[in-house]
Image (cartoon, rainbow, N blue to C red; front, side, top):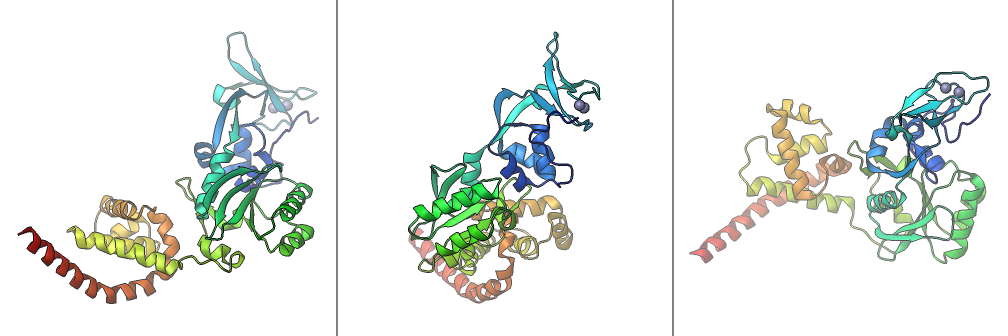
Length: 342
Ligand SMILES: [Zn+2]
Ligand SMILES: [Zn+2]
């Protein structure tokens, strides 16, 4: 019989990092439990968002799935073992390392800051008198508050929505890991308050670097909830980035492939570093060198700059026209500088 399956992923559920957040984030769990829930995302989660509580767990999940959690027992020699709690007894004791026995917690303040940043919010860190709910930022010049709530049941989610609607006199934005708890009554409350709901699961991706990345530019995503506010169009932002990168080639005498060529292939066309190298007839290290220059100049990860690929052609055309004028201006400046240093 099943003695304890505390926090373990139900057998019929596929791992999902956002569900992991909803189910586990208000407690401490051993690495094996986090791994069950987060699946392929576990390493990334472990590195970036799980912190050691320095407490030892009482139980670990059984790797054989005997039906219980094995109780962690310390032998006389100090070694830890997991002891089956099934009745009748089912499987052997297995060794447990201190790392496997240590309790890990989701680093919620760090996560909240990362979410605030990825949605380009002005950072706020205010815990509300509501369970697992924070104001993590403010958006637009009008300071539309952005809230994050992490719930695991419809009723508690609806309670948080009702409370926020009652407290907030003006529109607001609410974020939650998934949209599965948003039911008709929550929807109605939010609509009445002209508040926006966005789930992280369908709006963010995890990059292999552990960073979160928005699928849609945050300004566009949230625009309907701040009709008075204006943010620069992504096209304008990208034109600025493009100009920075063009300047790299112009300022330093960089051998082929030029930074702009690598930028076009890697960020514009979404090719991998090796594919870009093959296309340019150079080694991969050269491509990585160019990508590094892009990272330094823009302060952004080249992978993230791929989000601008829809604007590439249009901006490049406009920039080509502007480029002639730019080179002309630059040579003028150069002449003046030379004259001054004479
Ligand atoms: Zn077992
Ligand atoms: Zn057992």
